[in-house]
Length: 288
Image (tube, rainbow, N blue to C red):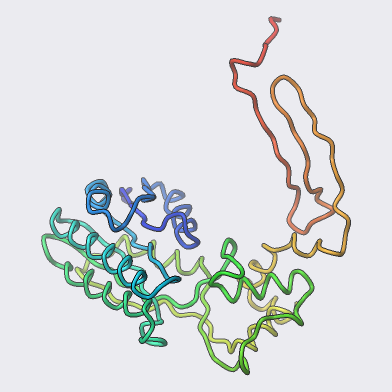
């Protein structure tokens, strides 16, 4: 496999963290862009330093004009820098909301972004990959933010399935795709030879009510390994009101300290502890 210099905008986000880990495991040199995607100089530096850029950054919550401004301007700058420098590959994460909810500001910004990135394909040696992605879930996604799967799993793990926030009749059907599948498909695009590729990353369709029932029923959930993994990631929530969390002593010495926070018999995911290490200059090492 050819090792590449890869940039990720939105690398600190949910999909970005999983993608970064996967690419590093494959020995690619990964740069997670932490700057402002609407700053021309910062975006140009990123593109100049990378062969491939995964453009995951974007705003999906807030005033409509701000969503449109940030998403459109960031993508425009990225496309422009790639076209000017040449021989760059942009992998753009769009959304199936372009079809499902085309009137939303987020969907409109993604559709505009698709056309901007597609516009550089074949120009000055550039390639473009456009992926319309379904609702992504998996360990690390945030409940009570923009993931209904994470929110439902949190409630179920806490033993509060009867409180699932289902709006309306719950019959609206949505596709959900595990983050591992998304990362695998995105990573595979590194081998793309053609100037332009458009694809959908679809998932399994559930009505919102069916999703709640599946997440809450251990037998149904077991048939969906990725859902089970998401549920297990909230194992600590099941401690609430069920077990008293014990307090453990802090063990200190000149070289640092260690404290166990959760013992393995208190959780479903193992031990949790904190260890601090003093700077070497402060540690006295006795001669033999």
